[in-house]
Image (cartoon, rainbow, N blue to C red; front, side, top):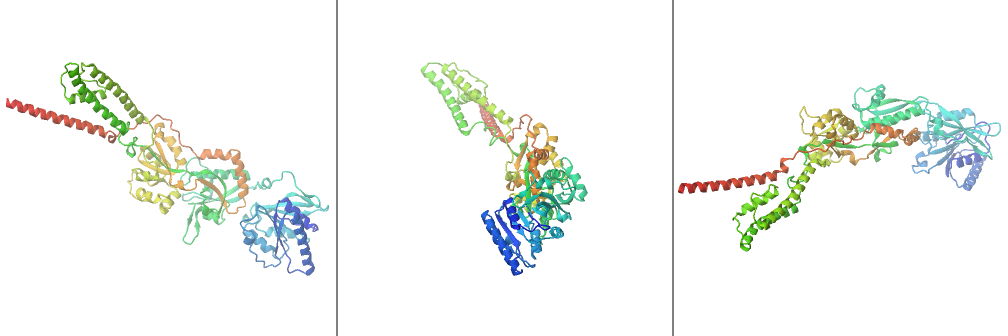
Length: 633
């Protein structure tokens, strides 16, 4: 905050200075004055003033540092004085009548140090004309919207009226404004109005036209078309979802602060020529050729020295999306015919059947020997057929007269009934279940037979061209390079063209998921929505939350940050987020039944074919033997 003493008020400078430091809660101060190059009496006066200031500041626990700017060719490095690691609040006192004051103000304005991080007190030692104060203000190009600056007018009753100084944009050739801040009297200190807020005083930009920049990947887009394109509901060709979201936030700022924007559309976010010249939106922002950016940016560490972020809310979620079809995966693991039972259960089951054959065979022999009961002699294969009939729940062709054999058959039938019901219910529930099938990771997507497409956006084209993200090289070599037929979905496409191919199956689309959800909700049936599967995208290794950015040290950053914070607290940001961040359609259909593949029941057909081959071979042998016996007769 700078204080200029006008008129005839030159007494009690030190008292006003120290009251200013206490008002701003500054515990550290830098005083720029001129000591050398003056006459001896003036030097003694400056030295005595320094001693008085140091003594009084020490009693208030305030540390003071003096810097001499007597020479007009003052060459102090302001970056060495205002280091990046500054105290939370630093007060700077400047005698603007010193020869080196203009050079200091020029350097300070160049590095944007006249912001609310520093409280400036510009205080002349002698009486000054009001026109001189106006000249200093007009020549100081660093006065901004967030400048902490005050002028003072002495009144006839000994009071000093303080005025808050700011500008809506000196770089836009706007004037310097002043607002009554309060008054000061000796012995009484500062008298400030209740609930004074610089934010409320400066929030009305009064139809100021700011410079804006955004990303629209289309040809022949002029500045006058930007508002119309970004305000269109739904998807627009060449405009991604998060650009429209951040434009909506910028509209909130525009309407609240009462300003207009003249946009400069660019085709991409970033780029660099071999000479080092920055391209795209980031280049425009870095060179301070814009005031606001109507888009979000992934705020990597390398970009923090170039940009100021004022808001984080948009989650950048990309992914692969495809529809399940039987040819890209199997619902059950391994062979579907044996999947309901574990290998140990199958082994125990086969052993039990073998024991049943042995028990039935030897029960007949034991009954004939011990019970003296006559049973027709039967081959071992006959008992095997009885056991298989029990397993198939078809009954047995021959019922023994022996009670032990009947009890054994009943036990075998009941046991196989339980196993048969469990087996069939497991198969049916497995067919009706909605287990995840198909590719579940990026490498599996690359290895699958799915045909890959990407939304036609600048970051996707750069992704395949530079191949810096994990798996991007493999995806380019195996999915992008192979040729495609004219009837196929192209590599780069738009969402509306891609959704019918996704519904058909056999295609996978990499996109920002919220862009494809509305088209899916309109074109997919309830059952088809349940068949959709998502895999995390290539940008999952990057920062997920996007930043609303301004140029570095922007004068509007603090004010816009407060406005967006209040909009978030009142629910405005949440409403805008819900409008633009469409959620995934809910699966409300019935369970999908997937057809049983031949590979899943191949073992059953092998067993059936083997049994038929064995039976036919034995029948041919018996037929040949019978024919030979008939010929002998």
